Length: 348
Image 1: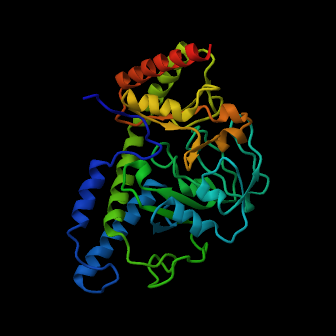
Image 2: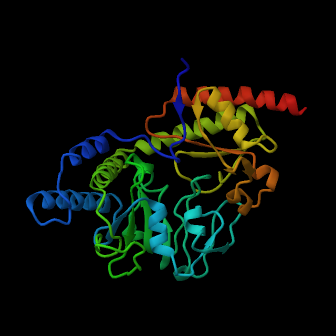
């Protein structure tokens, strides 16, 4: 049986052992967090302990942490009805609520003219390009950055931030909206008034416990320099790919990027074709372009950066993690180079 190598950490990170342990313990908590008896108080205490863990890991002491079903729900809670602007490089969860007309430079950086009326991501999921957030920014999607680079919400200068558990080794279907104290949002789910009246419904105690444990473990990883080692592997990967195919483009390479992300562009070689070929070779990666109903669409992130339609449909994203090894990186580079050689031969 072929050994599988997971190189799609930006899509989701493997569940951390710490999160698994915390979730198992939460399964034994019987009570409803809104109940006043001992069992209910135990469930509530677990939620509040996790809230502290997330706040400390995100540098958000004093801010309000509103637990949601994920960053997508957090974005809807934060952005609906505000009439904010954003750039086309944002995740669909953000562009769905904002006017996506803020210009993007060829290196993937965004210049914001009116911070108070703008949402701007901290890091792009496709290219890894990181933004310098202006003071007074209305909101930021910190989903990809949180857990990979040192981030302190209290230093970012944004009023709101969206984060997700499964990007840093927590459970899927769990996220949070982080709010500067005193900032209000209109609840989109009404009912019992949980989460300080901002998100009703009985809390996902198991998911919240896993989120808190994963956030704490992620902060510890950053403190010991784990992601610097990942950055070295990413650079090794890009050097090996460039050596095998000198004309290869690495989108956003000239800007500050996440330590683990490489967007590899080969004009004319469709991204999803590469994904399938690498999958057959035993490697899990993502395409830089999105698919809808079987029809390939060029990456709007790359198009916003100035790439033409053909080139924007020819990207893959390789995203590494702390468990990725040098051998895995080099084996992927060899497999990709072999497939690239066949593509070139067929195109000649």
